[in-house]
Amino acid sequence: MQYGKFITFEGIDGAGKSTHLAWLEHFLQDKGLEVVVTREPGGTALGEALRLLLLDHRQAMHPETEALLMFAARREHLDKVILPALERGAWVISDRFTDASFAYQGGGRGIALEKLEALEQWVQEAFSPDLTVYFDVPVVLGRERVQSTRATDRFEKETDLFFEHVRQAYLQRARQFPQRIRVVDGSQPLEAVKTAVAEVVENFWSDQADP
Ligand code: TYD
Image (cartoon, rainbow, N blue to C red):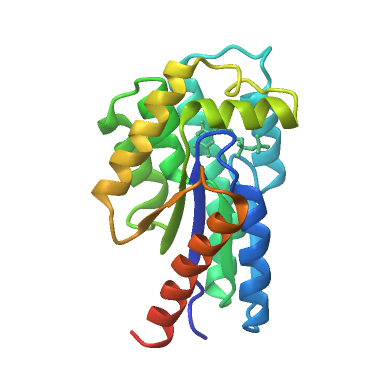
């Protein structure tokens, strides 16, 4: 049985990942694949319980506690959902993964890269996504979209400066891993973003079929 592939979607809050995630799920199902769609923090019963604590704006916590809880949820997610699915040949799509920890806890909260790298090594060893689609949007646009669609959680209540740091950290990751992380301009009209995502995914797909 061939191992499945692991695809992640990233972006600041309000970057517009969700619509495209549903599209990708159908694209892969149409290829006859088993597709598992999941998210972080979350994806397991324990992970979803941790998510409630992490996103609750009444729940203050030390930045390192926040980082440790993100990785604790991820450890469970890998063990219970991601790795078993890949092992049985399913393709897994996750709404966020470790790049979000480097962006939010690293860039946003200012936790040292070495600390996050140590957690990454502990929890994942050499494992990382096969493809990451990063939706890049200016901070003001992300904020407008979040405020027009829902009540804000603990992260969404952060300042524009926080999100500027998160965005810059994502862009830095994209420069560091240009093969894996594909940047899509999420500020374009929906149809144009869809086309850009489709191009990234179709390129990835043909690379798999014809390595
Ligand atoms: P998000 O994925 O945006 O969900 P929703 O669309 O329901 O708001 O919310 C998850 C939040 O968690 C988001 O603000 C980013 C944050 N986060 C981190 O800070 N670090 C991480 O490692 C992960 C996975 C998420």
